[in-house]
Length: 477
Image 1 (cartoon, rainbow, N blue to C red):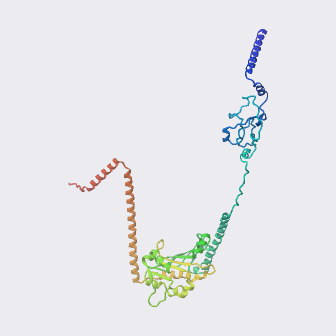
Image 2: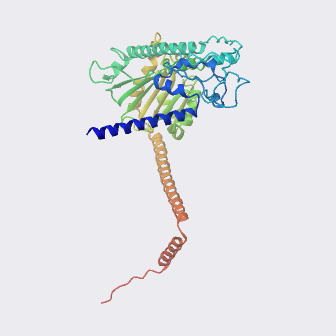
Image 3: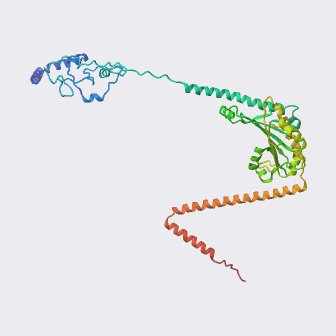
Protein backbone atom coordinates (compact mmCIF):
# COMPACT_ATOMS: atom_id res chain seq x y z
CA UNK A 1 0.00 0.00 0.00
CA UNK A 2 2.82 2.44 0.71
CA UNK A 3 4.34 2.04 -2.73
CA UNK A 4 1.42 3.23 -4.80
CA UNK A 5 0.86 6.17 -2.43
CA UNK A 6 4.46 7.19 -2.81
CA UNK A 7 4.18 7.05 -6.62
CA UNK A 8 1.04 9.19 -6.60
CA UNK A 9 2.70 11.82 -4.40
CA UNK A 10 5.64 12.04 -6.77
CA UNK A 11 3.35 12.50 -9.73
CA UNK A 12 1.43 15.29 -7.99
CA UNK A 13 4.63 17.13 -7.11
CA UNK A 14 5.78 16.88 -10.72
CA UNK A 15 2.52 18.33 -12.00
CA UNK A 16 2.76 21.24 -9.57
CA UNK A 17 6.28 22.01 -10.68
CA UNK A 18 5.28 22.01 -14.36
CA UNK A 19 2.37 24.30 -13.68
CA UNK A 20 4.52 26.82 -11.82
CA UNK A 21 7.08 26.85 -14.59
CA UNK A 22 4.48 27.54 -17.28
CA UNK A 23 3.08 30.40 -15.21
CA UNK A 24 6.48 32.04 -14.81
CA UNK A 25 7.17 31.62 -18.49
CA UNK A 26 3.91 33.35 -19.46
CA UNK A 27 4.59 36.25 -17.11
CA UNK A 28 8.03 36.85 -18.67
CA UNK A 29 6.39 37.84 -21.96
CA UNK A 30 4.16 40.54 -20.37
CA UNK A 31 5.93 43.00 -18.20
CA UNK A 32 4.24 45.40 -15.87
CA UNK A 33 1.40 43.03 -14.91
CA UNK A 34 3.09 41.31 -11.92
CA UNK A 35 1.83 43.67 -9.26
CA UNK A 36 -1.64 43.89 -10.75
CA UNK A 37 -2.46 40.24 -10.11
CA UNK A 38 -1.08 40.39 -6.59
CA UNK A 39 -2.92 43.58 -5.75
CA UNK A 40 -6.15 42.37 -7.36
CA UNK A 41 -6.00 39.19 -5.32
CA UNK A 42 -5.02 40.86 -2.03
CA UNK A 43 -6.68 44.31 -1.95
CA UNK A 44 -10.03 45.69 -3.12
CA UNK A 45 -10.33 48.63 -5.44
CA UNK A 46 -9.87 51.90 -3.58
CA UNK A 47 -12.15 54.68 -4.83
CA UNK A 48 -9.68 57.37 -3.80
CA UNK A 49 -6.70 55.72 -5.48
CA UNK A 50 -7.38 57.48 -8.75
CA UNK A 51 -7.38 61.20 -8.81
CA UNK A 52 -8.61 63.44 -11.55
CA UNK A 53 -5.29 65.26 -11.71
CA UNK A 54 -3.32 62.07 -12.54
CA UNK A 55 -5.41 61.38 -15.66
CA UNK A 56 -5.23 63.29 -18.92
CA UNK A 57 -8.59 64.82 -19.68
CA UNK A 58 -10.37 64.03 -22.90
CA UNK A 59 -13.86 64.93 -24.15
CA UNK A 60 -16.30 62.46 -25.54
CA UNK A 61 -19.12 63.41 -27.87
CA UNK A 62 -21.54 61.21 -25.95
CA UNK A 63 -21.09 63.34 -22.83
CA UNK A 64 -22.88 66.32 -24.37
CA UNK A 65 -26.17 64.52 -24.59
CA UNK A 66 -26.28 63.51 -20.93
CA UNK A 67 -26.98 65.83 -18.05
CA UNK A 68 -25.95 65.17 -14.47
CA UNK A 69 -28.86 63.80 -12.46
CA UNK A 70 -28.74 64.45 -8.74
CA UNK A 71 -28.87 61.37 -6.56
CA UNK A 72 -29.44 61.64 -2.82
CA UNK A 73 -27.37 58.46 -2.21
CA UNK A 74 -24.52 58.59 -4.74
CA UNK A 75 -22.40 55.57 -5.47
CA UNK A 76 -18.69 56.40 -5.50
CA UNK A 77 -17.22 56.11 -8.96
CA UNK A 78 -13.56 55.08 -9.09
CA UNK A 79 -13.14 56.84 -12.43
CA UNK A 80 -15.36 59.93 -12.40
CA UNK A 81 -16.20 61.34 -15.79
CA UNK A 82 -14.92 64.81 -16.52
CA UNK A 83 -17.36 67.70 -16.78
CA UNK A 84 -18.70 68.29 -20.30
CA UNK A 85 -17.88 71.98 -20.09
CA UNK A 86 -14.10 71.53 -19.50
CA UNK A 87 -12.04 72.34 -22.62
CA UNK A 88 -9.84 69.62 -24.04
CA UNK A 89 -6.12 69.60 -23.38
CA UNK A 90 -3.83 70.10 -26.35
CA UNK A 91 -1.74 67.11 -25.23
CA UNK A 92 -4.63 64.68 -25.07
CA UNK A 93 -4.81 61.82 -27.49
CA UNK A 94 -7.45 61.29 -30.11
CA UNK A 95 -8.98 58.37 -28.21
CA UNK A 96 -12.32 58.88 -26.57
CA UNK A 97 -11.32 56.98 -23.43
CA UNK A 98 -7.93 56.72 -21.73
CA UNK A 99 -6.73 53.41 -20.39
CA UNK A 100 -3.92 53.85 -17.90
CA UNK A 101 -2.90 50.20 -17.92
CA UNK A 102 -2.46 50.03 -21.69
CA UNK A 103 0.27 52.66 -21.86
CA UNK A 104 2.97 52.50 -19.26
CA UNK A 105 5.65 54.99 -18.52
CA UNK A 106 3.62 58.07 -19.47
CA UNK A 107 4.24 60.67 -16.81
CA UNK A 108 1.16 62.23 -15.21
CA UNK A 109 0.40 65.68 -16.47
CA UNK A 110 0.60 68.52 -14.03
CA UNK A 111 -2.65 69.97 -12.74
CA UNK A 112 -3.59 73.21 -14.43
CA UNK A 113 -6.37 75.50 -13.30
CA UNK A 114 -7.71 75.82 -16.85
CA UNK A 115 -8.06 72.10 -17.43
CA UNK A 116 -9.26 70.88 -14.04
CA UNK A 117 -12.64 71.78 -12.75
CA UNK A 118 -14.10 70.98 -9.41
CA UNK A 119 -16.27 67.87 -9.49
CA UNK A 120 -20.00 68.42 -9.12
CA UNK A 121 -21.44 67.79 -5.72
CA UNK A 122 -23.80 64.85 -5.96
CA UNK A 123 -25.95 66.22 -3.15
CA UNK A 124 -27.01 69.30 -5.07
CA UNK A 125 -30.48 70.65 -5.90
CA UNK A 126 -30.36 69.66 -9.57
CA UNK A 127 -27.59 72.13 -10.49
CA UNK A 128 -23.91 71.75 -11.35
CA UNK A 129 -20.89 74.02 -11.10
CA UNK A 130 -20.29 73.57 -14.83
CA UNK A 131 -23.25 75.85 -15.56
CA UNK A 132 -21.71 78.58 -13.46
CA UNK A 133 -18.32 78.14 -15.20
CA UNK A 134 -19.91 78.34 -18.66
CA UNK A 135 -21.87 81.50 -17.77
CA UNK A 136 -19.57 83.79 -15.85
CA UNK A 137 -22.04 86.69 -16.03
CA UNK A 138 -24.14 87.15 -12.90
CA UNK A 139 -27.79 86.27 -13.33
CA UNK A 140 -30.13 89.22 -13.03
CA UNK A 141 -33.52 88.47 -11.49
CA UNK A 142 -36.47 90.33 -12.98
CA UNK A 143 -38.69 91.69 -10.22
CA UNK A 144 -42.22 90.25 -10.33
CA UNK A 145 -45.07 92.60 -11.01
CA UNK A 146 -47.48 93.20 -8.23
CA UNK A 147 -50.62 91.12 -8.75
CA UNK A 148 -53.83 93.05 -9.21
CA UNK A 149 -57.00 91.67 -7.62
CA UNK A 150 -59.36 94.21 -9.16
CA UNK A 151 -61.36 91.63 -11.12
CA UNK A 152 -61.61 89.30 -8.12
CA UNK A 153 -62.72 92.12 -5.84
CA UNK A 154 -65.32 93.27 -8.36
CA UNK A 155 -66.64 89.73 -8.81
CA UNK A 156 -66.93 89.09 -5.09
CA UNK A 157 -68.56 92.48 -4.54
CA UNK A 158 -71.13 91.80 -7.27
CA UNK A 159 -71.87 88.38 -5.78
CA UNK A 160 -72.40 89.87 -2.32
CA UNK A 161 -74.66 92.58 -3.74
CA UNK A 162 -76.59 89.98 -5.73
CA UNK A 163 -77.21 87.87 -2.62
CA UNK A 164 -78.27 90.88 -0.54
CA UNK A 165 -80.57 92.10 -3.32
CA UNK A 166 -82.13 88.62 -3.63
CA UNK A 167 -83.28 88.53 -0.02
CA UNK A 168 -84.33 92.18 0.14
CA UNK A 169 -86.26 91.99 -3.17
CA UNK A 170 -87.91 88.76 -2.11
CA UNK A 171 -89.02 90.40 1.11
CA UNK A 172 -90.41 93.46 -0.71
CA UNK A 173 -92.55 91.32 -3.02
CA UNK A 174 -93.87 89.32 -0.10
CA UNK A 175 -94.79 92.51 1.75
CA UNK A 176 -96.74 93.81 -1.26
CA UNK A 177 -98.66 90.54 -1.65
CA UNK A 178 -99.42 90.31 2.05
CA UNK A 179 -100.49 93.95 2.17
CA UNK A 180 -103.01 93.35 -0.66
CA UNK A 181 -104.35 90.21 1.03
CA UNK A 182 -104.69 92.03 4.36
CA UNK A 183 -106.66 94.80 2.68
CA UNK A 184 -109.02 92.82 0.45
CA UNK A 185 -109.05 89.16 1.58
CA UNK A 186 -109.31 89.25 5.38
CA UNK A 187 -112.28 89.54 7.69
CA UNK A 188 -114.86 92.21 6.79
CA UNK A 189 -113.11 92.84 3.45
CA UNK A 190 -114.73 93.01 0.03
CA UNK A 191 -113.93 89.43 -0.95
CA UNK A 192 -114.95 88.06 2.44
CA UNK A 193 -118.35 89.69 2.00
CA UNK A 194 -118.90 88.42 -1.58
CA UNK A 195 -117.37 84.90 -1.46
CA UNK A 196 -117.91 82.13 1.02
CA UNK A 197 -114.58 80.37 0.50
CA UNK A 198 -111.20 82.07 0.22
CA UNK A 199 -107.70 80.69 0.05
CA UNK A 200 -106.17 77.53 -1.38
CA UNK A 201 -107.45 75.16 1.31
CA UNK A 202 -110.75 74.16 2.84
CA UNK A 203 -109.94 74.83 6.51
CA UNK A 204 -110.13 78.13 8.33
CA UNK A 205 -106.37 78.18 8.85
CA UNK A 206 -105.58 77.58 5.18
CA UNK A 207 -103.24 80.17 3.60
CA UNK A 208 -104.82 82.88 1.49
CA UNK A 209 -101.99 83.19 -1.02
CA UNK A 210 -100.17 80.61 -3.08
CA UNK A 211 -96.59 81.53 -3.91
CA UNK A 212 -95.61 80.17 -7.33
CA UNK A 213 -92.38 82.14 -7.63
CA UNK A 214 -90.41 84.94 -6.08
CA UNK A 215 -92.64 87.44 -7.89
CA UNK A 216 -95.86 85.47 -8.60
CA UNK A 217 -98.64 85.06 -6.01
CA UNK A 218 -102.14 83.65 -6.49
CA UNK A 219 -105.42 84.00 -4.61
CA UNK A 220 -108.55 81.88 -5.11
CA UNK A 221 -112.12 82.51 -4.00
CA UNK A 222 -115.37 80.68 -4.69
CA UNK A 223 -118.91 80.33 -3.39
CA UNK A 224 -120.89 83.04 -5.18
CA UNK A 225 -123.88 83.08 -7.50
CA UNK A 226 -123.47 83.36 -11.27
CA UNK A 227 -119.86 82.17 -11.19
CA UNK A 228 -117.82 79.09 -10.41
CA UNK A 229 -114.92 80.92 -8.84
CA UNK A 230 -112.33 83.66 -9.04
CA UNK A 231 -108.57 83.44 -9.50
CA UNK A 232 -106.33 86.45 -8.85
CA UNK A 233 -102.71 86.42 -10.02
CA UNK A 234 -100.20 89.00 -8.81
CA UNK A 235 -97.25 89.44 -11.16
CA UNK A 236 -94.77 91.69 -9.39
CA UNK A 237 -91.48 93.13 -10.55
CA UNK A 238 -88.48 90.83 -10.28
CA UNK A 239 -86.98 92.70 -7.38
CA UNK A 240 -85.02 89.64 -6.27
CA UNK A 241 -83.07 89.69 -9.55
CA UNK A 242 -80.44 92.41 -9.57
CA UNK A 243 -80.17 92.50 -13.36
CA UNK A 244 -83.95 92.85 -13.71
CA UNK A 245 -83.94 95.60 -11.10
CA UNK A 246 -81.33 97.54 -13.08
CA UNK A 247 -83.34 96.97 -16.27
CA UNK A 248 -86.50 98.25 -14.57
CA UNK A 249 -84.66 101.44 -13.67
CA UNK A 250 -84.06 102.05 -17.38
CA UNK A 251 -87.41 100.67 -18.64
CA UNK A 252 -89.98 101.24 -15.88
CA UNK A 253 -92.74 98.70 -15.32
CA UNK A 254 -95.49 98.27 -12.73
CA UNK A 255 -96.74 95.55 -10.45
CA UNK A 256 -99.93 94.05 -11.90
CA UNK A 257 -102.80 91.93 -10.65
CA UNK A 258 -105.25 90.12 -12.94
CA UNK A 259 -108.60 88.55 -12.03
CA UNK A 260 -110.24 85.67 -13.90
CA UNK A 261 -113.89 85.07 -13.10
CA UNK A 262 -115.29 81.77 -14.44
CA UNK A 263 -118.98 82.31 -15.17
CA UNK A 264 -121.62 79.59 -15.21
CA UNK A 265 -122.78 78.36 -18.61
CA UNK A 266 -126.37 79.51 -18.12
CA UNK A 267 -125.48 82.79 -16.42
CA UNK A 268 -123.91 84.69 -19.31
CA UNK A 269 -125.56 85.74 -22.55
CA UNK A 270 -123.84 86.45 -25.88
CA UNK A 271 -121.54 89.24 -24.76
CA UNK A 272 -118.20 90.37 -26.20
CA UNK A 273 -117.00 93.58 -24.58
CA UNK A 274 -113.68 95.22 -23.64
CA UNK A 275 -112.64 98.48 -22.05
CA UNK A 276 -108.97 99.53 -21.91
CA UNK A 277 -106.57 102.36 -22.42
CA UNK A 278 -106.23 103.38 -26.05
CA UNK A 279 -102.85 101.83 -26.82
CA UNK A 280 -103.70 98.61 -25.03
CA UNK A 281 -107.12 98.50 -26.71
CA UNK A 282 -105.54 98.60 -30.18
CA UNK A 283 -103.23 95.74 -29.28
CA UNK A 284 -106.09 93.71 -27.81
CA UNK A 285 -108.25 94.19 -30.90
CA UNK A 286 -105.43 92.90 -33.13
CA UNK A 287 -104.29 89.98 -31.00
CA UNK A 288 -107.36 88.73 -29.09
CA UNK A 289 -109.30 86.45 -31.39
CA UNK A 290 -112.84 86.97 -30.13
CA UNK A 291 -112.49 90.76 -30.18
CA UNK A 292 -111.05 90.62 -33.69
CA UNK A 293 -113.86 88.38 -34.97
CA UNK A 294 -116.97 89.70 -33.21
CA UNK A 295 -116.33 93.22 -31.87
CA UNK A 296 -115.28 96.66 -33.00
CA UNK A 297 -114.55 100.07 -31.54
CA UNK A 298 -117.55 101.99 -30.25
CA UNK A 299 -117.56 105.78 -30.01
CA UNK A 300 -119.43 108.08 -27.71
CA UNK A 301 -123.21 107.70 -28.18
CA UNK A 302 -125.28 110.54 -29.55
CA UNK A 303 -127.62 112.30 -27.17
CA UNK A 304 -125.34 113.85 -24.61
CA UNK A 305 -125.05 110.77 -22.43
CA UNK A 306 -122.09 110.46 -20.12
CA UNK A 307 -119.28 108.35 -21.41
CA UNK A 308 -115.88 107.16 -20.40
CA UNK A 309 -112.88 109.47 -20.35
CA UNK A 310 -110.90 110.10 -23.51
CA UNK A 311 -108.01 107.98 -22.25
CA UNK A 312 -110.12 104.83 -22.60
CA UNK A 313 -111.48 102.99 -25.64
CA UNK A 314 -114.54 100.76 -25.80
CA UNK A 315 -114.62 97.58 -27.92
CA UNK A 316 -118.01 95.88 -28.16
CA UNK A 317 -120.07 93.55 -30.33
CA UNK A 318 -122.88 96.11 -30.47
CA UNK A 319 -123.66 99.56 -29.19
CA UNK A 320 -126.47 98.10 -27.16
CA UNK A 321 -124.10 95.92 -25.16
CA UNK A 322 -121.67 98.81 -24.62
CA UNK A 323 -124.41 101.13 -23.42
CA UNK A 324 -125.88 98.52 -21.07
CA UNK A 325 -122.55 97.60 -19.46
CA UNK A 326 -121.21 101.15 -18.97
CA UNK A 327 -123.73 102.31 -16.41
CA UNK A 328 -124.09 105.57 -14.57
CA UNK A 329 -122.80 104.01 -11.36
CA UNK A 330 -119.63 102.86 -13.03
CA UNK A 331 -119.03 106.26 -14.59
CA UNK A 332 -119.54 108.01 -11.26
CA UNK A 333 -117.34 105.62 -9.32
CA UNK A 334 -114.41 104.98 -11.67
CA UNK A 335 -114.66 105.78 -15.38
CA UNK A 336 -116.00 109.31 -15.28
CA UNK A 337 -113.77 112.30 -15.88
CA UNK A 338 -113.56 113.33 -12.23
CA UNK A 339 -113.49 109.84 -10.73
CA UNK A 340 -110.90 108.45 -13.12
CA UNK A 341 -108.26 110.99 -12.13
CA UNK A 342 -108.56 110.01 -8.50
CA UNK A 343 -109.53 106.34 -8.49
CA UNK A 344 -108.72 105.06 -11.97
CA UNK A 345 -104.94 105.49 -12.04
CA UNK A 346 -104.36 101.76 -11.65
CA UNK A 347 -106.90 100.65 -14.26
CA UNK A 348 -105.43 98.78 -17.25
CA UNK A 349 -108.22 96.79 -18.94
CA UNK A 350 -111.27 94.57 -18.56
CA UNK A 351 -112.57 92.01 -21.03
CA UNK A 352 -115.88 90.10 -20.97
CA UNK A 353 -116.58 87.35 -23.50
CA UNK A 354 -118.50 84.14 -23.99
CA UNK A 355 -116.11 83.06 -26.77
CA UNK A 356 -112.81 82.76 -24.92
CA UNK A 357 -110.37 80.18 -26.29
CA UNK A 358 -109.63 77.52 -23.71
CA UNK A 359 -111.33 75.34 -21.18
CA UNK A 360 -113.59 78.10 -19.82
CA UNK A 361 -115.27 80.01 -22.62
CA UNK A 362 -117.40 82.38 -20.53
CA UNK A 363 -115.04 84.53 -18.49
CA UNK A 364 -114.61 88.03 -17.09
CA UNK A 365 -111.04 89.36 -17.09
CA UNK A 366 -109.81 92.35 -15.08
CA UNK A 367 -106.30 93.78 -14.99
CA UNK A 368 -105.14 96.49 -12.57
CA UNK A 369 -101.86 97.99 -11.47
CA UNK A 370 -100.87 97.49 -7.85
CA UNK A 371 -99.97 100.58 -5.79
CA UNK A 372 -97.36 100.75 -3.05
CA UNK A 373 -97.79 99.03 0.27
CA UNK A 374 -98.80 102.27 1.98
CA UNK A 375 -101.31 103.23 -0.74
CA UNK A 376 -103.10 99.92 -1.21
CA UNK A 377 -106.48 101.53 -0.42
CA UNK A 378 -106.33 103.48 -3.71
CA UNK A 379 -107.53 100.46 -5.68
CA UNK A 380 -110.59 99.76 -3.52
CA UNK A 381 -113.05 101.03 -6.16
CA UNK A 382 -111.28 99.04 -8.89
CA UNK A 383 -111.63 95.83 -6.88
CA UNK A 384 -115.29 96.68 -6.22
CA UNK A 385 -115.91 96.46 -10.00
CA UNK A 386 -115.46 92.66 -9.87
CA UNK A 387 -118.53 91.69 -7.80
CA UNK A 388 -120.52 94.48 -9.47
CA UNK A 389 -119.96 93.11 -13.00
CA UNK A 390 -120.45 89.51 -11.89
CA UNK A 391 -123.99 90.38 -10.86
CA UNK A 392 -124.57 92.65 -13.87
CA UNK A 393 -123.43 90.05 -16.46
CA UNK A 394 -125.28 87.27 -14.63
CA UNK A 395 -128.58 89.15 -14.87
CA UNK A 396 -128.05 90.70 -18.30
CA UNK A 397 -130.21 89.57 -21.24
CA UNK A 398 -129.94 90.72 -24.82
CA UNK A 399 -132.86 92.03 -26.82
CA UNK A 400 -134.33 89.81 -29.55
CA UNK A 401 -132.84 91.91 -32.32
CA UNK A 402 -129.36 91.94 -30.79
CA UNK A 403 -129.63 88.23 -30.03
CA UNK A 404 -130.43 87.36 -33.65
CA UNK A 405 -127.36 89.29 -34.80
CA UNK A 406 -125.10 87.66 -32.27
CA UNK A 407 -126.43 84.18 -33.06
CA UNK A 408 -125.87 84.63 -36.79
CA UNK A 409 -122.37 85.93 -36.12
CA UNK A 410 -121.59 82.95 -33.92
CA UNK A 411 -123.04 80.51 -36.48
CA UNK A 412 -120.86 82.04 -39.16
CA UNK A 413 -117.85 81.88 -36.88
CA UNK A 414 -118.55 78.21 -36.14
CA UNK A 415 -118.75 77.44 -39.87
CA UNK A 416 -115.46 79.24 -40.46
CA UNK A 417 -113.87 77.36 -37.62
CA UNK A 418 -115.13 74.06 -39.03
CA UNK A 419 -113.83 75.00 -42.46
CA UNK A 420 -110.44 75.90 -41.01
CA UNK A 421 -110.38 72.56 -39.23
CA UNK A 422 -111.18 70.71 -42.45
CA UNK A 423 -108.48 72.62 -44.31
CA UNK A 424 -105.98 71.78 -41.61
CA UNK A 425 -106.89 68.10 -41.88
CA UNK A 426 -106.56 68.17 -45.69
CA UNK A 427 -103.18 69.84 -45.39
CA UNK A 428 -102.08 67.18 -42.95
CA UNK A 429 -103.25 64.41 -45.33
CA UNK A 430 -101.48 66.02 -48.30
CA UNK A 431 -98.36 66.39 -46.24
CA UNK A 432 -98.42 62.73 -45.33
CA UNK A 433 -98.95 61.73 -48.98
CA UNK A 434 -96.02 63.88 -50.10
CA UNK A 435 -93.79 62.36 -47.43
CA UNK A 436 -94.86 58.84 -48.46
CA UNK A 437 -94.21 59.58 -52.14
CA UNK A 438 -90.79 60.98 -51.33
CA UNK A 439 -89.92 57.86 -49.33
CA UNK A 440 -91.05 55.63 -52.22
CA UNK A 441 -88.93 57.60 -54.68
CA UNK A 442 -85.91 57.28 -52.43
CA UNK A 443 -86.53 53.52 -52.11
CA UNK A 444 -86.84 53.18 -55.94
CA UNK A 445 -83.57 55.02 -56.42
CA UNK A 446 -81.85 52.36 -54.37
CA UNK A 447 -83.38 49.45 -56.33
CA UNK A 448 -81.54 47.60 -59.12
CA UNK A 449 -82.57 47.62 -62.81
CA UNK A 450 -84.21 44.16 -62.61
CA UNK A 451 -86.27 45.17 -59.59
CA UNK A 452 -87.39 48.35 -61.35
CA UNK A 453 -88.49 46.38 -64.46
CA UNK A 454 -90.45 43.93 -62.34
CA UNK A 455 -92.10 46.79 -60.50
CA UNK A 456 -93.07 48.52 -63.76
CA UNK A 457 -94.46 45.27 -65.18
CA UNK A 458 -96.52 44.77 -62.05
CA UNK A 459 -97.83 48.32 -62.23
CA UNK A 460 -98.81 47.91 -65.93
CA UNK A 461 -100.68 44.71 -65.16
CA UNK A 462 -102.56 46.47 -62.38
CA UNK A 463 -103.48 49.35 -64.66
CA UNK A 464 -104.67 47.01 -67.41
CA UNK A 465 -106.78 45.06 -64.97
CA UNK A 466 -108.28 48.27 -63.71
CA UNK A 467 -109.10 49.45 -67.28
CA UNK A 468 -110.88 46.22 -68.23
CA UNK A 469 -114.70 46.34 -68.15
CA UNK A 470 -116.34 44.71 -65.22
CA UNK A 471 -118.46 41.71 -66.13
CA UNK A 472 -121.06 40.41 -63.79
CA UNK A 473 -121.70 36.74 -64.13
CA UNK A 474 -125.12 35.31 -63.30
CA UNK A 475 -126.23 31.79 -63.12
CA UNK A 476 -129.28 30.79 -65.10
CA UNK A 477 -131.55 27.99 -63.96
